[in-house]
Image 1 (cartoon, rainbow, N blue to C red):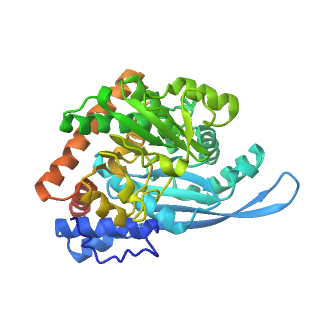
Image 2 (tube, helix red, strand yellow):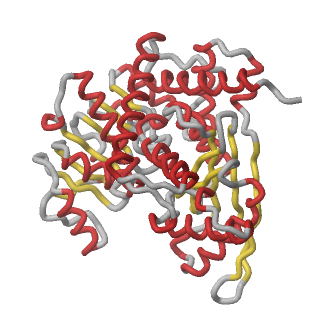
Image 3 (tube, rainbow, N blue to C red):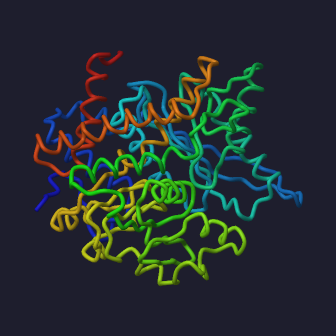
Length: 427
């Protein structure tokens, strides 16, 4: 049985705290690598945390003040990189954890970025487009001294999209007095976005799943897949995996789940949701309880929605052979111990969903070059990086006799620590 060797205390009461979860995995990997206390302090501490208060005049004339964050966890290997989310439950702990995960994610796929993350506490669903634009532009203005192509490069995340990135890019450019496309990624292609970016995270999930199947001697045609989430990541993964021959037997969403043991027609399900606003009631499958759907027997489970969906309270009920984490932080440290006992092959989030940041890196490179690639080249280079990263993680797991998650953290910590040692500490 895997053991949690870190000094970070994870109990049932704090099991879902994302910052503690990130810290626990960090400490175990650091212990395995025998990092000294000084390096642990450097790697474990965010470089900068920014809290801003954002006044916005609403459409009805009222003034409201929103709180926003930007955390830059590490810039040792390059500019901070990470998304911005708009949600009512954003917390500084969450943003800290996500920023650290971005540091490790960029290091796992060996791209020259550090980790950052941003968030604004708001409910974007009750704000008009005008209010969202005002909020976005003022948030950008408040953090403008800390972002830029060489400093910190934001991207879309929960409840933000390419339109929001266009507003950020325009606001930053207006302050700089010239157009700076490389300040954000995930933009519309007409403003310097990369081909293949919308599909990248889901495509990366498919690529590493294929690598896991190769290890097990299985083919996509023999593989039953359950996907939690039908948004950008889950939706793209389901579409691409079905085209590659996988049997997508269940899609789980916030309002229900739809199941077909013979495989769902993903294109038809997308049309149904567009017409009705829900995946439920789909004629090509049967509705089932969304809370039970994750526990269907399957070969691959892809949680591609939110954090903390697999915990010590439900991990023993999973019936998958491969867990490919499309979302950030879907599995708690206590659940990891149970999955290790069950011998589930976990493809951890900082590897599984790194296709998105990899193609964001490609977008940043293309913007800085002023020369853009076709989609075939984007996908070819993504394949090379995802394959090499998977092999590095599995190799570490085998060499150090650890699970894949701790192996991924070890790969990442090793690379960031090396950069810090080579640079030295400026004093």
